[in-house]
Structures are given as C-alpha cells and as structure tokens.
Amino acid sequence: MCHQTVSLAARHLEAHGISTVIMGCAKDIVEHCGVPRFLFSDFPLGNSAGRPFDVESQAQTLALALRVLESAPAARTTLQSPLRWNADGSWKLDYLDLTKLSPEKIAARRKEFDEVKTVARAKREAS
Amino acid sequence: MTTTAPETNAAFAAEHDVPIPYMQRTRDYYLALGYSPYRWAHFVEVPFTPLRTPLGQARVALITTAAPFQPELGDQGPGAAYNAAAKFYQVYSASTESVPDLRISHVGYDRLHTSAADINSYLPLARMKDAAAAGRIGALGPRLHGAPTNRSHRVTTETDCPELLRRCREDGVAAAVLVPS
Image (cartoon, rainbow over all chains, first blue to last red; front, top):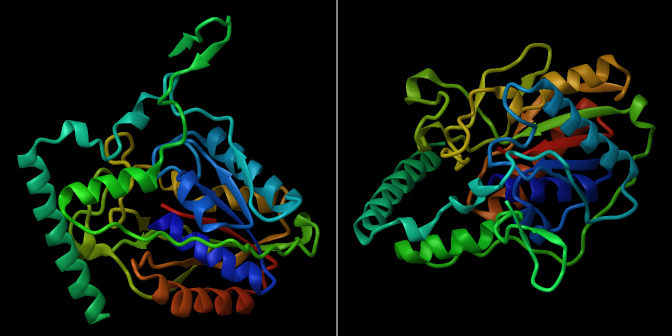
C-alpha cells in the first residue's frame, strides 16, 4: 500500500505545481497508478532508498532519482536503477509464494490477517 | 542464472528475474485466503509539472511512509513481525535538523530478504543532507512529512494528499522526493 499511497500523493502535489519523484521497489503498482517520475530499484520491499549499510548504493540511488526529477521529459518517466540485490534474482520467487503454503498454513495466515485487521481498525477508529 | 535461448547464441536472464508482479501476487494470495480482490488505484491521465527552478537552487521535501517509533506499541525493531498497532492515521511532520526515529514494522516490507535494520535503506534523509551540502539540491525542506498508508483511496486522496500539499506549501518547496517503505 505504501507505493500506492505515495503514487497518489505525487499525483496530487504535481497537479498543484510541485515537481515530484518517487523512489520505490514495486514497479507495477506505481506504474499502474500512473505517476510523473519514478526511480525503480529492483530490490526487496523496504529498500527504496538503497541497500542497507551501503552508503554508496544509497547515494547512487538518490543521485539517479534527482536526475529523473530534473530531466524527465514527460509524465510516466520510469528509470530502473542498474543496481542488483544479488546475482541470480532468486529472492523474487519468494514473495507471497502460494506454492509453499499448505492449506493449514493458509488458514493460519487468514487468522493472522484477520487479527491484524482488527487491531488496525480499532486504531483507525480511535484516531 | 542465465540460459541459452533455443536456436540462438544469446544468453537470456532467468524467467523469474523480472520486477515482481506485486498486484498479481497479492491478488492471488488474498483470493487463496478467502478475500475479495483489491482494486488498485489506476489513472489514464498523469499530471506533470516541470521543475521550475534549477535543482541546485530548489528546496526539496522528503515524504515517507515510515512511522514514528512508539516504544509502548510493541516490537518495531529490525525484522519485527507485522505490527498493525504501530500504524498511524494522520499526516505527521518531523524536523529534518536531526534524524527522527522512524520504523517500518507497520507495513508489509519483504521480511524474508531484508530486515529494516538501516533507516537509510528506506529513508534517504542523510543522503539528501549530503546532496544539499554538495549543492546538488538547493536545500532540504525544514521538515519531512509522513503519509499514512490507509487502505482507503478516498481518505488518501481527499484528506491526506491535501494535507501533504498544505505542509509542502508552508515549507516553500519546489519539489518532493517520495519514498514508500
């Protein structure tokens, strides 16, 4: 949801005269929404600003985002960072991989998710 | 991993080595759990405002979806389980003079392959300060702004986005860098 939230925010700011660039890791969500400028890092979610404990990776990621901010020729400009999380990209197979979940695990995940929703709803209604 | 394409000498990347199709994976996952499909925000028209001043003279805002650390709300540290109690539901702002303690235990980051142990991997505040010091941007905004990750498109677009705009205008920024967690 984070990627959708910032996509909606970028659109709103841009429509009111503020130029924007998104730094993110979920390419499809941002592009499906449609945003002015996007620096895509093909990293696990949670690393939109670069690799952990790697200042060079973080500096390079921001530098590319700033290049996109100042030079994008039109809306829907996406630049993909050349940085790689690892050599074979096998981490991409794991996200919400249903083939690794038995019916019992799926039922347990449903229960967990219902509990999370209950907590979030109570907090939202109290805010 | 690479394989050789049939009848060519080209070495192709592995089939899986593409950007993760998050919308499809999420749809399939929650359908398997018994929920209705989620409708993702989608527009044909996209607004565009060219940067009105050179970047080296522009004041730039930082907008994040990370949450202020609240010690009374359970584990929010590196690798913490999804912590819905740590969510927030109003736009917040924090001074960029120091480094606020912001965490991402309240969102679905990739807990299998990363741990959110380094704030700089999801909040480029230090790197933006470097960029300002180097003259790459004119200045960093005086505050960073936090965007709630509501599931409701309506609340995000009708309440949170206008509030973010109001705060950005107060700060006099020409541009914004937005960073999801």
